Image (tube, rainbow, N blue to C red; front, side, top):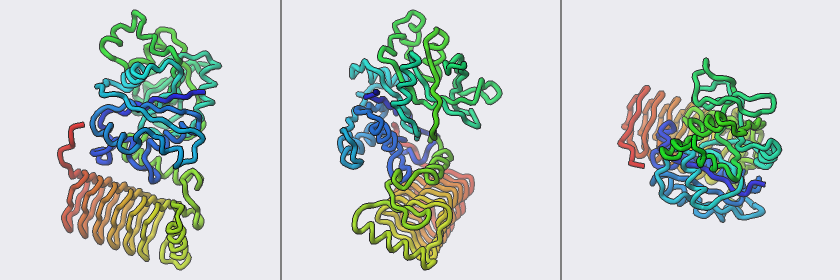
Length: 413
């Protein structure tokens, strides 16, 4: 059984901005908790006891450490059988994801099989079953592969009848892709994995730290005859690298996870509410009565967090509203995510959009296909179409913005 996991978290996650301007991509909230918390919980339930975060940069480290600390609290929160210990890569300017994994394992003296996952991925996978596959194949490295409709931006593998990878190319054009099997960034590494760096052919990779898994390591291992195998994923997998992919993942999970998986109670058909306290139960009764009286209209599926409030005449369709958020009267939230501690005025329409944390939105506002960064203020009567707003920005009353980004200088990471 795999007991240790390494999660490289580097870079600035520029494609996911403005949600990642001031926080690590692993802490972006999905279904009302951080992305990385989903992954660590899944690992813990599969028997992983130690998680090593290969963090690079000030924002990544400080925000992750301040939230997760050593991870011991996860056992009590989720009723786990064993504690999960979280450790962090010391300050090291890693060049790639593989470099971060190599340094972390070297620093902590890890000499046993490990699982590697990516900090911005959401997946459904049994690590124990994947490790058994890896062991039975006698693999040096095993890569979880997922069929995709569009290979753009992914590493792609060609396999033989035994699932051994014959050829691998990083981010090919659709015309050049050898298959539709995408590299998910989920790996099982054998206990002596990094021994390949001692080979003469790997001297340049070692000296110049060319250790990107997809761009350098995997193609080189295959070329030099190492047993690199694919593992067929059976569950879902999302690379949440852009706002569009984030929203797609959120909607898929909303429609496919059980209430238990969302830590919620189904208060009426397809409406789920989180919270366990007596106050949460009173809120559930109030929301249920609003729906019965027609004061709150619901279509599709809806997830509501703790300590929220919703005004009369509001309509929700395929919507996620996070903890402590306040929604005014006669609002519409359609196919969108509203994160925690957001305040919406009256007659606000939000469609295909993501509203960041602690945002304030005035009355009579329209937001379509847009992303609003944390702590932004949107005044009354604003119209936004295909807009990105950086954190802490102010949009004045009556403004109309189309295909526009309101930004300030991003902090140095």
